[in-house]
Length: 257
Ligand code: MN
Image (cartoon, rainbow, N blue to C red; front, side, top):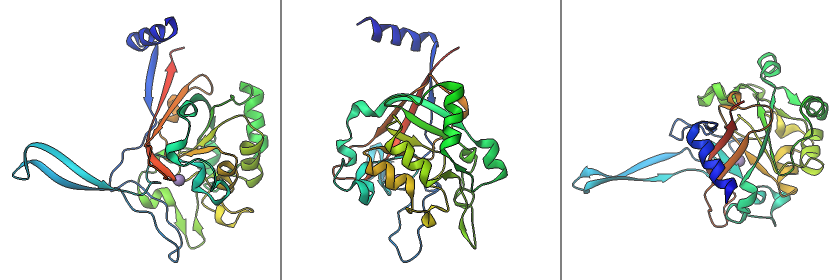
């Protein structure tokens, strides 16, 4: 098995580095906010069981409570009604959790316009420079939103609702139905734009990707450390039986140039 041995040697020598794309998971982790008449996701919470005390003299451990869609997390196809008969999070084939990354940087546009929407032409322009999106890969969108670590900054709402970047409905349909990637990864709390409740269809990234048996990854960070092409993403959601998603540790492997 020369390939695996070469890989381990490259990790040992530093020729390949491991970048953590995961946001820390705590009670401070920003979460989605839905209108008050709808069900709400829970913040991540730790409940201490014992900490080297009379509840357990030699050990420390916690229970935790969280929404499936909290922090850096993985959207399974059955998360959306369009994918209701497709895989739950435990059934996602593990082979599809590892794939090449295409990193598209829209941080300059988003700095000027927090409601910036990626269009098909933006992806086509990236492909003209870097080649086609990778088969079985992840389309990772850098927006600079990873710097917004508080609930208020991440949601960025005013009287008109949340303002955060995303993808047009047409582009979401194209990524889901015509591009070869298996998923879309973003720095925001959800794959859809803050204003996507009013798009046609509403929440098009969720609607089209889940309906096409594809995936979402959210609240990624450190995308600035990745090259436009050549990195490998490893996404590792928990196999929650019948679950619609899971907090995930997401890593990227990057070869030194
Ligand atoms: Mn989600």
